[in-house]
Image 1 (tube, rainbow, N blue to C red):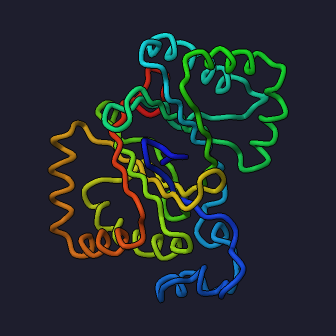
Image 2 (image 1 turned 90 degrees about the horizontal axis):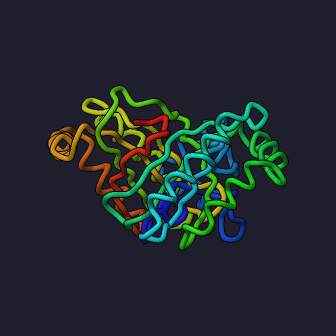
Image 3 (image 1 turned 90 degrees about the vertical axis):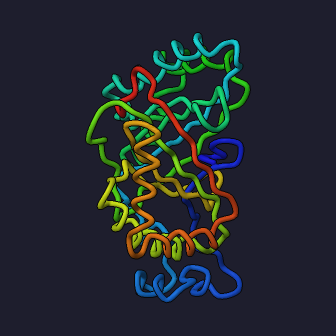
Amino acid sequence: MLVHLTSNIPRRVVPGARRAISVQSLLHGSKESNEAGDHEIQGHSRLIARGKYLHGIEVHRVKPDTVKEYKKAAERYYTGLRDDPELRVKLSGNFEAIVGEQDTFYHVLEYENHSGLDNAWKRIPGSEHERAHDALRPFLQSRATQLAQEFAFLPTSPPHEEGGIFELRAYQLNPGTLLEWEATWRKGIEARKKFLQPVGAWYAHMGRLHQVYHLWQYPNLETRKETRESAWQLDGWAGTVHKTSQLARTMDSLILTPLSFSPLK
């Protein structure tokens, strides 16, 4: 749930450390996590986040009979944010779900960390951007926003080829298991990289917490099938899937297509 990304989706996340019981055990739930974090009682962000950018994930559920009008209004709003040099907002991707909750759109914005988001929030009220955003409202059934950070070991990157489809994998983790999930997945992803490089991976920082996301690009569904089948033949991938599945409450696979103005296509 990218902020509840599809009906029950997703995202990587973790707030600051919980205090009660043992903070050490909550932050470092496994041997791998202990080795990854040798700093006692630190927040998850200091241990696993890249820390350079903050990503906003905006989810819009649109009235089915207004999709065309919504797309036009969304293009005006998001390209307006992108093209305003004072906002310093970048678009990472703008997508429509074709598998998952229908008539749902995902917009990923990149800010220059928290100060960059503060700057944008100060400048938008009363501006043309606020008016463009208000023009979206008549087409929406609901909307949600989540702030996420990149995993340090996998910064967001542009796709190597244009075209095809994107798959957003979303996981709702059990509270207190983010570091264990990250340590396990980080090892397994090295195996997957032999076939395909992920576009990006994030965990929820504000909004619905304990959610993890990673985004992949494929030429088509057949290639996705073949790539995933090949990965199962690699040492380490099956173990990664088994371990991480034990840490998640829900898992979602969303197939997305980029909108005409999306930088990821």
